[in-house]
Length: 310
Image 1 (spheres, rainbow, N blue to C red):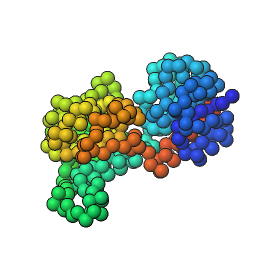
Image 2: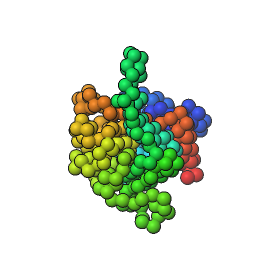
Image 3: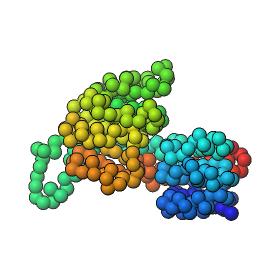
Image 4: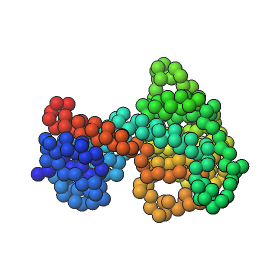
């Protein structure tokens, strides 16, 4: 009888916290073996997952003893929260534990894409000296536009302002009198993308936000603008973004999330040959430090639930 099943990577110290009180099975490869996972889930009181394990359908039906799901991160796209609620299964994201990691990812890519000089080591080694071609731009004095102004976006805002940027944001769910707006300009989405030098996305994926960033909106972005998406892949129409980059409408983009993860060869083909593009495998919120924080918070939350103290 396994009480807790961990299907993706987790900090070992946090795994030991769980093992100290409950029979715990830790196998990061389980995410790629759904049949074995379903077979084990019948006895599980808790599942601990990241973003790839699909907690829905047959898995939930098999897990008849399941009490809670600990999410090593904050996005819940891979968890059928309605089905969990109907079964009395609590879902616990590690809210706040990876905010700093994502904020630093956004700022580092803004630096890299504006400067546009960090992918040319091979030319320098070869004796080329393309100084004139690699004169980039400074972050200071530019406008950071945040689509969504929750906790992570506010961390980005603080760092952007410290670097001399002005910050504007769009968030229809944040009241106009909220204190967070005191140092940030409030804009409509259309106005924001026209004013910002760097547009960073911080919105969940919903029916309303799916393909929010489409060809029409991309066409209104400031010439030379940069788009960074470390939120959810479906928020951006990826084909439209590739077209905008190839056409030179945008100076660059960084994508950490995709509609299909991992990318298949077919899905990845549309990105081939685009120079001013950074692609990373959904790691914006994962650093050595944030992994420790996220893992600890998740372990503590699951333990509190199973002890009946939450």
